[in-house]
Image 1 (cartoon, one colour):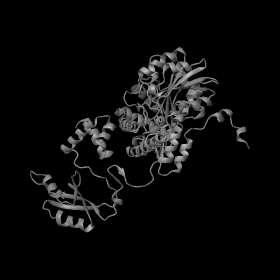
Image 2: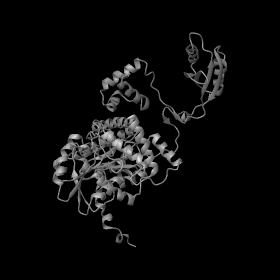
Image 3: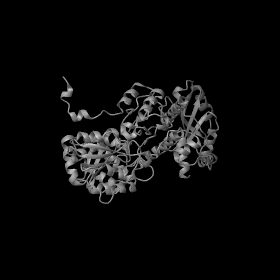
Image 4: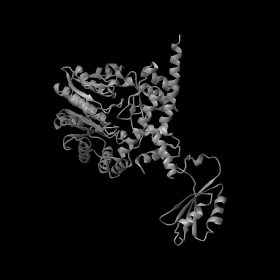
Length: 401
Length: 164
């Protein structure tokens, strides 16, 4: 039986994830240090875990309403209002999804017809482009550069717009670069978005993890609420990756259609995850998100440590202002990210992710996560430093006549 | 105490007390000179009294006995519990002494090489004190977690090594 005969051309056309190879290699080593994760190292706050256990004990283990527990949507509305000055009606403008991943998928399914184009700033998370493709749309990468602090520039956005462009994806704070878009940077995009009558799909999953100025949602800018779909969730800020609970907020005309898809495809997000998320939000709203602040302070220390250590060893590293990644350039070693990641893993047993996994413009970079204890980061930095000096020495030796 | 000193203390206590002022400065986005000054002050003020290693007793591979002794005492007029505590903490085998609320008054932690040594301490030095009414000695059998570090090498929650 030839599976190719049956598999859809669309599904088959999607390239496999660029990180798979590294995953397989690391899995074979027992003393490897990985800086490859995309999730927090902190356990889910205890009260959220406890709330989930209680919900199971009480037998709250049935389908919830399609849109999610009403109390959770209400808490989410309060959260959006309090943290980001966003007003959404919990009755019909907020949806609880299976992680931000489902929210991304739903947004594209709801807005794309075959041939529609979506502008995707890159480097960025690996799933946007395949998601667009699966909806019959066409992902159009918009390259972002280190000289612009990896922000997307209005003129680059403008240049990529065609008559088929329907939406622009905004992945900030950004995985893998750690870039953020402050208010002014977002404001500069608004005229382009409005002039071409585009939608903004804003993935704000790392919104709680910014170092410096608090996150600004593009939906909070004048005239943008009506044309923005906001994706958010609990995974990063509340250390709740495995629970799979995300948020999608949008004007009701959009959410109506999005909810229809969600209801046919997913039914509802898992109940225990929703109860855990509810507790996380409720306690956060009570104590001004002290737990999140505590974790953020830890990330911030590690961020400073990583940036300084990498720059000190001669790997030029942009100062990230969000998420929990550093994105150093490895060009000075005469390697691209792929070669660097490969050699680093084989020689020093440190796993990092090549920047090319996140788009062509990430080719000369690697992504290192600092969602690790300082002890692990200390060890990783020592190993990377050894690697860098060895390869710098090699490079010098080979250049000699 | 200033917020800056609190942050430094947090790193020294919970991260690693061997971190250099330069490294602490990096973590906090501060100047190394300021960190150095703050640490000296913490030491001078007696906030930081010692930099010590946290040891896993299960792996020391030598014989020793840790014990916790509950001590009931008669507080002395004008001096209260402090004078008694002072008398007790003079003994070199005593590692820590705490004044407690609840069912007894002083909690005395001691370390001896053998059970006999601990027993001798209790019967010959502690119990014979005039102010001591009674003692209850508890031997520590196993240490699971110490100073925030889980010592058990059991199954820990793991993350997938490489993720998007």
